[in-house]
Amino acid sequence: MKTPLLALSLAFGSLLSLTPNTTLAASIGKTICDPAADSDNGYGSGTYRGHFYSWFELSQNNIKSCDVKIGFYNDAGRHYRAEWNMAKSWGEDAIGGLGWENGARYRKIGYNVGELTSNSNIQKALVALYGWSCSGSNSQEYYVVDSWKGPGKFVPWDENAGAPAISKGTVNANGATYDVYLVDRNGAQYCGNGDSRQFKQYWSVRRSPTSTGSNQELDFGPHANRWDNSDLGFKTNGIANGYQILAIEVFGDANLNHKGAVDLSLWLR
Image (tube, rainbow, N blue to C red; front, top):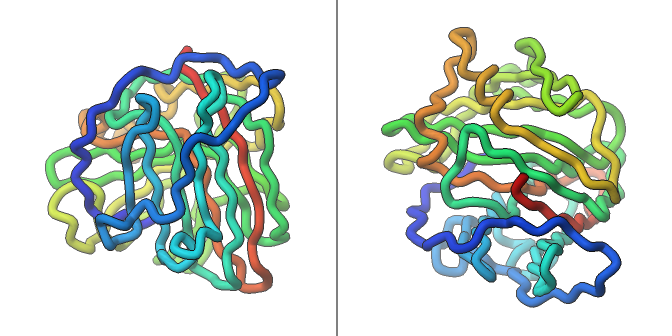
């Protein structure tokens, strides 16, 4: 994902700390169809009931028509729902979710994906712990992909090579094996001065997705430690300078209107 620069000045309130109770009725208290209304660059952020959120879409057309939207629950223990109906298109991209304005190297979370649907046989909908490490003007984007909806295994795309990324090894965390990828990207930066330039994406992708409807655990520390090795060069000292969210990312599909939804809760462990 290529994220435009936006200074995050909103205060982060209470931590996400409640394990979900799926037996309780839940209601959406806030829906965002145009999070970028004040920024004109496809990116918006804020807080809802003390929880930090961010949302980005490469093209704002779907946001303005509310075909891509994110809603936040009022109920304790339920956090957000996102729905999308993207027009036929390669390259469309939307990502967002709830989390923290400042990342943490050893953050441990629990989560429950109550629903994850997609009608695409090509593109996947990803659930990932996502954020940025900002060390000076150096921007590094990262993903720990734990779940997805769509056929087969997920492998990041290397735009420069015009091919799937090549694995840089593995990391073990929470009893699962993740494949590690390092991808060069070109585009606007979250960190620094916002110029369009090259930055690196760090990926850990679970070899099989977690199941929906059950509580899961995710530790960020093992992934940051693996990327921090000399062969990858991740700047762990910049993690706290960027945001960190449990995100849904969805992509356009040239073959059909990509439709789907996710319903997701998260909490600190």
